[in-house]
Length: 575
Image 1 (spheres, rainbow, N blue to C red):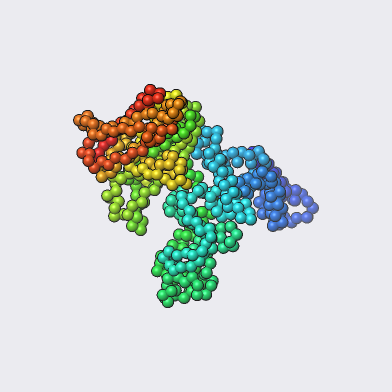
Image 2 (image 1 turned 90 degrees about the horizontal axis):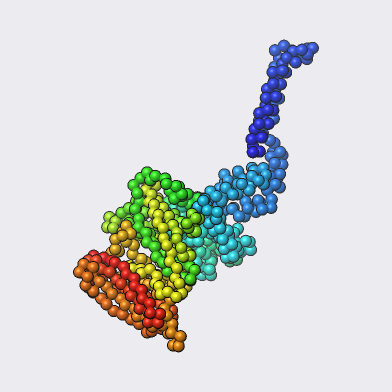
């Protein structure tokens, strides 16, 4: 609104100047010999076009700095310092009043909201959580958000893995760093499998050369070498073999002082890539997956071939009011577009999903990237393989809707959509019940530090479900595999006197081709977990002895205390 008023006033002023320019010659002619006929008239400079002097420009900037204070200055200089673009920053600085600034801030977060229809902004909430985490974990004589590790964490989130050396010490250099043994300052290498707009397999190195906890980001991997300037110490492989001298490290130029080594040529060829990656990391991150939002909030028509994928949902009780809903996506390799580089074929898929309730309010959004890498020569053999993505969401019992959109990064027109309603069950205390019966190709116990966390982890078990094709066909196992199945049973009756349960668990495998029972066995909870009202069933069965065909596994629970019975079954195919 302010800019519009400036334009109107400026136009009026310009009109007056033009009118004066027409009147002035007539007035000059009437004067008595002050101006000769035909003599040139000196034109005054247009004040609207005059460039401000350095003094005026400094005064304007000083006034702007004085105007940006309080919450607005903190928002710009601290809150969004690592995620605001240069264009957005300049636009914000040129706003003239608090009303415009408030509107700008609202639109800033709205542009980044994974669900603009929701009153909650998950992006903003996650951003401030990251700031709090950075301040708690990365402070080093200054707030954590000001450090390089805080910057990267706030901008890009938690890395997929961290190689941490908090005490430095003895270090065996990899060959791409020259080989040999040395001693290092404390350092960390953060690894991201994929960063939107930056690339795949991103490694970011931080070094604490001051030994004060202030890790700074570096693109020179030799900077962590504590013996780099010590003569005769920490020699590289070529230096040990007499093929190079330590002084050569400081005379070759370039980004890194790794010295001559078996991979020097390759390191030099990648210097521009490292500079380019550094520049991208320091810039504001791209707004993630906004292109997929249009396919989720509207009925936008797909322009390319549909990107097919399968989804499985399961239900696991956490408390009476909370149910864990693992969502498993399965994407076949033959449906992914691969790019070949340096002998490796890479396919990348962006995933955007959300769970909403009956009032269309988004309860839980999620977004991630799945990357598949195989040697180029083996790509043809792996076309029938599948990649699996897992997201576990806690929900209250009730009806929900799940929307999922995926995009083939190497083929932008290759988009897939999936929508389905789910009914999250309520597990009443007085009713015998069970979780989903999950058939899995992998099942193993996890270390105590990983209990309840990580992909495919439920409780203390990592279990990767098999997903049926199209959601209707039975899952398939090979004869050289084992059938792993997992299920929990809830609300077993407890005898008031003995304080023990008394339930029988029956396992049955049936050949659906001839309806013959292949396996039938049972066990008692009094021997496996006698004092609990909840038991977890984890079993594995080799399939070598089974002929190819369709089968079904059934688990029956007969509770001798509450006199209740339940049964769960799942079909599968052996090929």
